[in-house]
Image 1: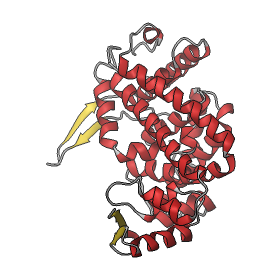
Image 2 (image 1 turned 180 degrees about the vertical axis):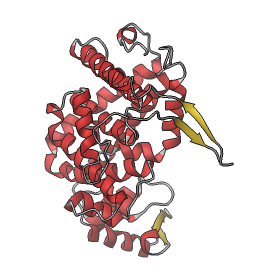
Image 3 (image 1 turned 60 degrees about the vertical axis):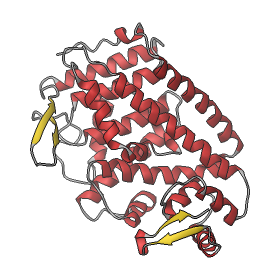
Length: 348
């Protein structure tokens, strides 16, 4: 069993890239606080969009999918799941809602993590829900020619409960004593969690839910308004590469977690900057056509109606559709495809 003492990170010298990412995140978090005081009601509309995106994206990373319509129904209306994928999606929705509503009452302990995992599988019959793994698992890659290679072997089932307790205890100690910057501790905790791989199933999704929980508990609320899971899904190769690079030497305690720290901090900062862009559209009270025009100017290449709606949360779907039709008629946009595959791109 490796030593999970986080004391070594207290004295570690961080490079300028890590330090500049941390400084930029604090700056953006301060601006977000001001924005929320100015337009709380308008920005509340971003919350439901982010929940839908987070639920859809985090599950899609694991190959768990359903239609756009069903995702909305499952998240907004809490409709009954129809199949296994929808049962898993509904469980993610439930855990995310608990974190949104009660993050300040959820301590970082093994017991609470197990309870959240149990809720993740509450819509299906999974005998291992809320229990650490009972078989050895492996982190592997499947290559185009079909062969599979083991990249990393997590701790055994026997070692897992103690390892999970250790990372929770160390996290709580260094955060409670203000020993280490939270934006350093959070990625290290998530990296350790993924290396332990404590469950038979659901490790990736639990890691993303725990990321949101840890950020909220430390005063970083961007994930409430902009989906971090969607950001990860957009560039999931970078996510897996950073994780893989940071795993070398983990069992011996000689790993370099900096690649994963930089990846996660960069993702958080990108989400904050997305929030600022969306606030600019919410803040300016313009006619629907002008609002949609500004939103399209933030897009390069092809984009969907839904992409624009996410940037204009104050507008109804019919208003967005009407504005896009006008812009096509005016020769500002080109429309291509049919039905769900309709995409637009700018001509000016």
